[in-house]
Length: 230
Image (cartoon, rainbow, N blue to C red; front, side):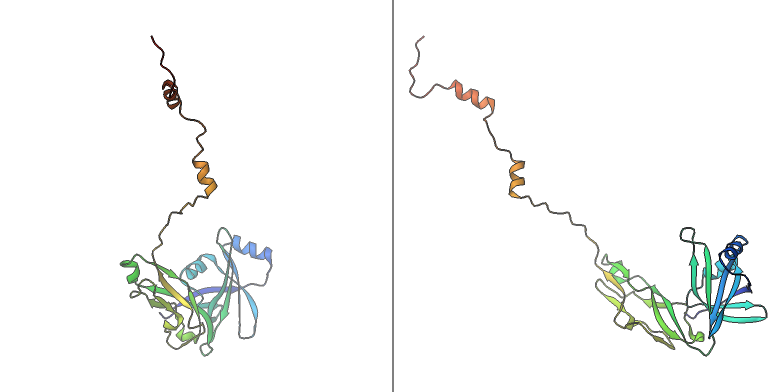
């Protein structure tokens, strides 16, 4: 699917540093930077609310049009830094792009369909590769790459060589596995093998006869002993 363009208003900022960045975040803005084409990185700021909307649909292969004063700059999101626990955006990097200049990006892979091996054989679909590196002109930049997995049975796999991206060069190893249908997981109870000493411990040696058996033997007359007369 071809990428669509998202629009975001940006403003230049003259102050930088951690203190300024914290002040911007408290005011509902996010510090940013734009670079590319040999230009020096330029410090910007954008609305956090508007940026969140863009990032909700934009990935590394989505074009973002930055309105910077009277200029409209075509960019892609190169890097997003987030708070480790709250996941708030702390900083964002934009890479300026030009229409005639090819880009190297990671396009996300989207698996389509339910595999035969999952539906009827109890298998599990395992996606090994989540994106693929491609080289492409901005006008041909895909938002994501679809790969149909409907016909896969248990043991079947799809590889990078199965991916087709129009007007783009795939830079990954063609033999890399994208996804595979693995057999159903069966839990096997462990078999306990007892050592000879453990078996003996479970069957203790009988060191004396049961009392009832002893009393029965004592009640019997000894062989060859004379009977007493009454």
